[in-house]
Image (tube, one colour):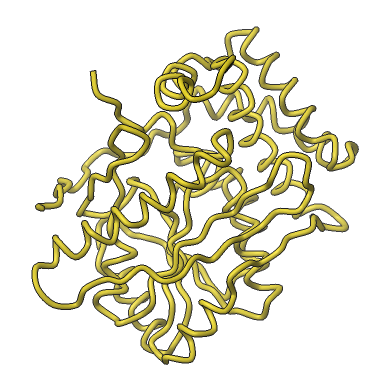
Length: 320
């Protein structure tokens, strides 16, 4: 199967967006909640916040509601699509509280359990490093880095310039630094992708893996020149194949990672699955497509178990 090649983007980042203004207005309240509200109450507070935003027209739950209802609603009697979309948005806001609490005095000290560290140890024992392919769930960004650092692993994260709360130039220079600061406390380094020189980040990651290092990449389609289309929940989802591509070039183990919280359980579990094999011979596109589809199969299992925590509902393409 041939991967889709993305044309290099020539779009310049906006100076400021409407979403930036809305987030700037929301930020003081989020920070107050992060400091004043016990974490056990964060889910309900965030749920009420998103419900209020929807009522004021500041948030539209319908797109996620429509897709989720078609993808999983038929298997769940009494499925409330709008309530599901609000729960999904609340998870995103709760992650914001985690970030803000982490950079405040006392930090964020939630219980986080690392499951499957034997797969990381086996990869490092083999001497070719590890690529962590981290699924895009609402709690993955900070919890995964925190769990790995607490276990003694030194991880470098391959990241896009817009990583954070905003995609504008002003937002990248201001509020995004809050999230980067929280995550850097648990990282050995951050490799930022330069779209004018996309190979520079790849080469930097390869050098780390050659030294038996660990590189993490969030699974998505934001960056990368090659995109695989995987079957998921009866639809299709695009994933950039930078992570399996790095594993194929370096011989590093490709380890799928899922950060999840079970209902009623305050513990966040960062689950490292057994490595996905990436063939290093034959057609490269076929090898990367196969690896991406295997990741999609694992992801579907976790999405079905924790659907409101998955962040890519809007990117799932269902048949007409």
